[in-house]
Length: 119
Image 1 (cartoon, one colour):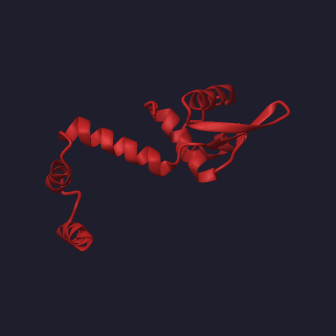
Image 2 (cartoon, helix red, strand yellow):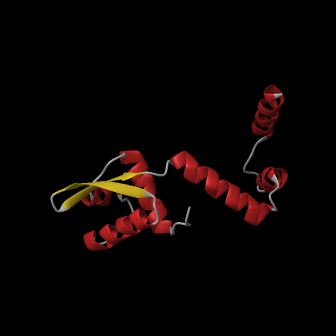
């Protein structure tokens, strides 16, 4: 699975949400500065070349759909981030969020309960 650019990832989130879409449909969903139609079409074709999307052809137009699930991408992304930034340690991940005050004691207790219930 090749790494996506930020813009490619943004487009994938839209395709995951819409499930099937023409370029104009994707363009309508973009909330930030909208790229030119041809630029967006090129980004989507790049996603196709990277193996993230496929399409159904209707004459000269294409309806695109994701072939990599959001779950599969999330798993790959998280595993890579944990490996690269936290020395493959989930303890380091939790410690990071605790130090940054991004996770509460109640949430930590919920995580512990999840782990204990798996046994």
